[in-house]
Image (tube, rainbow over all chains, first blue to last red; front, top):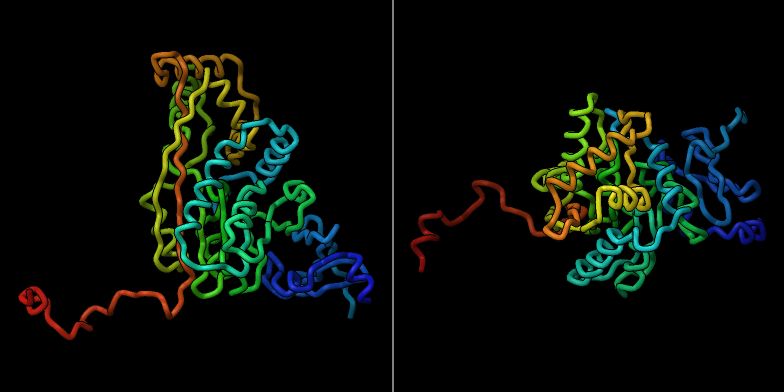
Length: 66
Length: 286
């Protein structure tokens, strides 16, 4: 897990600061998919080359996982 | 909320400008960045974490890093291309994707004049700031491109059919109120006018395109500007705004704003009626 996080080169301190631009809700880091997940907006934002891309147009819509 | 700006067009214009990379077309940004450095130099404190909010260029972040007053700088842009491989965050335009009270300094250069909901964006910035965090920004204000606006309007009314071509801009006297409404303490605004000279309107239009400032108004005409209109406008511009040597003037008003996120330690006016000495007594004392 930590290995994957290292590869995606995202600063964990940066992650703590970020919120979903739409809902201002928390973002959870998914190191496997390299995504920032906003449960409140049901969107997963990509992180590309260490750059969080908080654009709904680029995000993956979350399926029902319940 | 009224949509004044077409966000897709704004993004396309910034991308085109980046690709074009016309040397010198960033003169306004360079000027604003230098001024930012001067203004920051007068602030006697250090900032742990700063963010540059949609500055469309690395200028502001560079000034902050070189100021020696800022520990960490985070760039936020609306497009990955604008980060140009530098670290940063891409966020939806007009949103500030930070936890409340997470920044010590927020800076915006030359982009707040291109937002649909300026009061909303200012509130988001204030919330992202820690108590006693500083917001420092500069945007194009009223008076910007007034010569171009007048010439285009005159030419269009002669040829028939007027459409919006130059953005509406905030008046300096309204900027303080905007900051206050957004909850900033100790708001200050002032303006600085820059006059640039060109051979003709065409040179100005070329620079505007190269700085990504082409018309992005939602209500703009989708037809390309006709040659007849362009030439008539250039003619009127030359008649009304030329210097004796034939070169024409273009005005840019840089509206500067600063405000602090409220904190208990800041000076505040006393409550009315809370004085312990009457005014007459205070005046009588010599």
